[in-house]
Amino acid sequence: MNYLSNRVEKLAESETLAMARLGNELKEKGVNVINMSLGEPDFTTPEFVKLAAKEAIDKNFSYYTPVPGYKELQESISTKFKRDNHLNYKPSQIVVSTGAKQSIINLVMAVINPGDEVILPAPYWVSYSEMIMLNEGKVISLATDYKSDFKITPEQLEKAITPKTKLFLFSNPCNPTGTMYSEKELRALGEVFKKNPQVLICSDEIYEHISFEGKMFSIGSIPELSERTITVNGLSKGFAMTGWRLGYLGAPQAIASACVKIQGQFTSGTCSITQRAAIAALNADPVVIKPMQEAFLKRRNLLISLMNEVPNIKVNNPGGAFYLFPEVSFYFGKKYGDQVIKDAKDLCMYLLNVGHVALTPGGAFGAPSYIRLSYATSEDVIREAVSRIKKALSELK
Image (cartoon, rainbow, N blue to C red):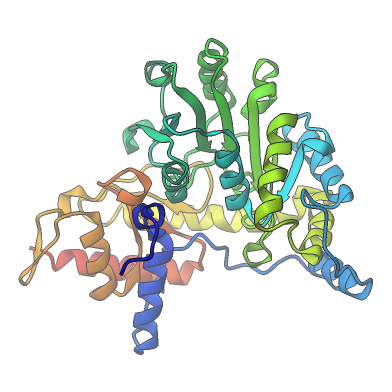
């Protein structure tokens, strides 16, 4: 007897978490596996943030919190949006969640009806498409490649919009490609949105503080788009607080209120101690995390340099995040003994089992000819990982 719902049967396991799990299983068998599949900084949370959490424990912040977050935290987020992004969300328009992932699923549940179309520039973050399908929306994927730096054009966007289009969802800087849209590029896309007022825009800016080229620009700061833009952010990446689990969104009031209603039936308010720590992080000058950003830039440059030495791999020069997304289709159809590499998933499994490097196949991100490498690890580990990848690929015939 199968007791599972059709909904969960259709839901795919997160490919990033799946590859991490397979890598850990090999590690448990004594294999020295390098994990480049997860997007998790190897830095520790800043000391002043940890001190704020300890103080919160001592002051007995141990009770249920308001569903959208402490008022003081909402005010800090509102101030941060104004200070860093020129966004004007009132505290009542802020909803704090258990990670940016929950912020996004709250939004999707709040606005998507069955049959509504959601435009995703591909490659897109692995969970976007599953969240949309879980809520019976329809994914409209816009293909890009490394030659265009994985950026869509206004013409692509305009052609994709139909009367059924409800939401445009993207990350900037992008997971999995590291692509970062400039102000000029976002304003050009904005001209298309101005002509299509039925389309909501969700800008996932979780990698805001890991950007290398030019100044970060939030599309919601365009006045004509501010009333229908939802901006998502959090602390996991920029402040190395993945395990603390805190994300947030700013949204038009009706949408923010709807997200509060949904969250109130699922998790209620997020962890009280994390929220108090978040206030300290958000009130700080972002310059405090500059050393981490500089380290990621050095790692990016090192990884690009090393991957350019791997035959038949094609890479771009990502402007942010901590990922490289090489095109690897040359190796499809190659063999290792009797094993045929049919696609990127096969290639990742081969590199895990033979090269002992855990990577993520691009199909999960809507780009089946690519793989994702996370360089949220040390320079020595990056060198060893690429050496293993290069050796393993050379053994394919």
